[in-house]
Length: 233
View 1 (tube, rainbow, N blue to C red):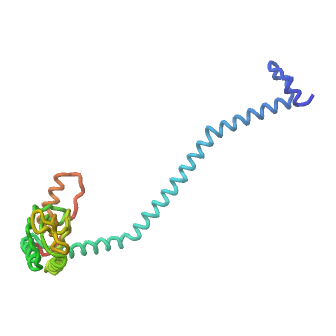
View 2 (view 1 turned 60 degrees about the vertical axis):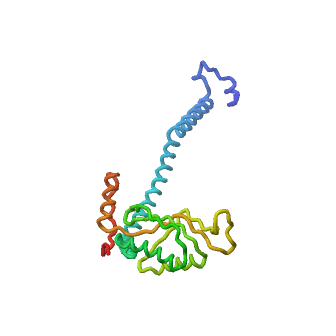
View 3 (view 1 turned 120 degrees about the horizontal axis):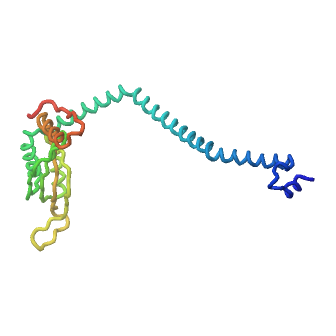
C-alpha cells in the first residue's frame, strides 16, 4: 500500500498499527507545531527585546557622544559665558541708574521740545522690577510732523546715556485741528500710546528683587545677578 492509502485507512483506535511512514509524518507535524509555537511565544518576544535593546544602545551611544562633546568644549563654554557676562555688564553700565532716571525723563521732554513737537501728555507710570533692570512705562500724546518726530528720535539717540524706548499700543495718525474738523493732508501727526524706557538696578535693588522672588518661590534655584560696577551716579 502507498502512503496515501495508509492515511485513508488509518485506525484511530490502533495507533500502534500505523505504518512507519504515517508515524513519521505525524511526528514531523507535531515537531513543526511545537517549533512554530515556541518561536511565536518565546523567540519572537526575545527578538522584540533585542530590537528594543539595540535601539536603546544607539540612544545611549548618541547621548554619550553629546556629553563627550560638551566635556571636550567645557572650557570654551565657560569662557564664552564669562565673555557674555562681561558684555552684559558693559551694556548695563550704559543704561541710566536710579538717580539718573528723573534727569533722563526731563531730557526726553526737552528733546521733544527742541524738535518742535507739542507734548500734550507725558505721564510716567510706576516702575516694573525685573531681574536686573527696571522698566518704566510712559503715557505719551504728542503732535508733530514726520520731520519733527525724526529729529526727536535723533535727539534722544544723542543723549549722554543710552536710552531705550520701546513702543506699546502706539498709534500715529493725522491730527485734526479741532472738534469735527478733518486733518489736512500732509499736516501734523498725532502720536499717542505708551512707551517704555529702562534703567539698571543697583546691587541693593537686585538683592531685594531676588529675595522677593525667592520668598515667592522657595524651591526656585538662586540666580546670581550680574553686577554693574559703579553703582548710582
